[in-house]
Length: 166
Image (tube, rainbow, N blue to C red):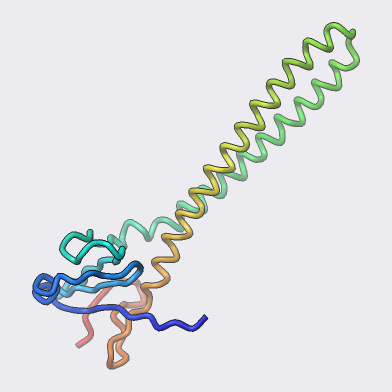
């Protein structure tokens, strides 16, 4: 799919005077009198003055958090697999017991297994939601880099710091 991506760029005074509506996903870049670059992301509803500034520093750590989350999911899955194996072994031992005892223990184990499956479903849902959220935020960051002026000069250093091209 071909698309043209346009970002809006202006001084604080220009943004305050115009107070435009930024469409959803459109970036606005504001240069303060001190030369600091501030960023806002349009939502298609709110004008410039009501949008919150986009804090890139807080998002830089999301990739590390995603890795931690993936490891936690892997650990939880391994724990649940171990629990499931233990329960299978318990069920096997119970099946060798007397019929009346087996029925009672099977009912208990079935409830435990249902609870474990419910917990696994809840964890999978939560993990999927968190991973989608983090991947979305990382995608927003990838839309930002690199910034290039009309003259072809980059507005982002290799370390990710913003500066205004002279």
